[in-house]
Image 1 (cartoon, one colour):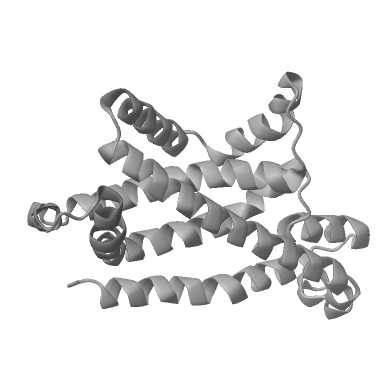
Image 2: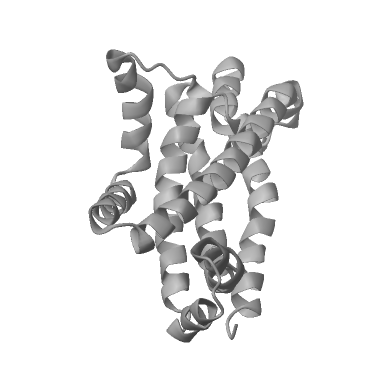
Length: 221
């Protein structure tokens, strides 16, 4: 059997195409849910980290430090396999969203913290002098400016977490990698893994280019 028959067997790829397509859908759903939920949670944690009373700020700092330090694979295993021992059972999808979202939110919190702290203090003082409520100052003054600073690193983190969705296969989540691995076992041929790699490139390469665009666009923002 030659190289093409082993690694680029199109007959095998076509045969397992429905499995791979299902995996792509699950991977995209997992990535979208993680980035959306983790992003919102991260901004909230960031605001707690900066503006809450000191004891609560310490808890936010501990949250950020712990989930930035713990490997995603370890967290996935803990969420999926350890939580049932304390009566919490999550499906493989929600276990993956939980683990990935916790990690992504911690990085998001730090990115937005850096963005907020880069805003001149005069902006907040001007808002206070106008009598704007705190929530309006945050929503209308602080976050829009912080977003411009945070977009490039935040987008980069989103791409990284989208790649890390492949780790969800360890908790039997039928993502693209899991479906490709099952297809490889079914056909006794590694071609499905090559097809999966191409699919990852198709939806991640534009995202990588988007990061570069944002870095150029907001470099002098």
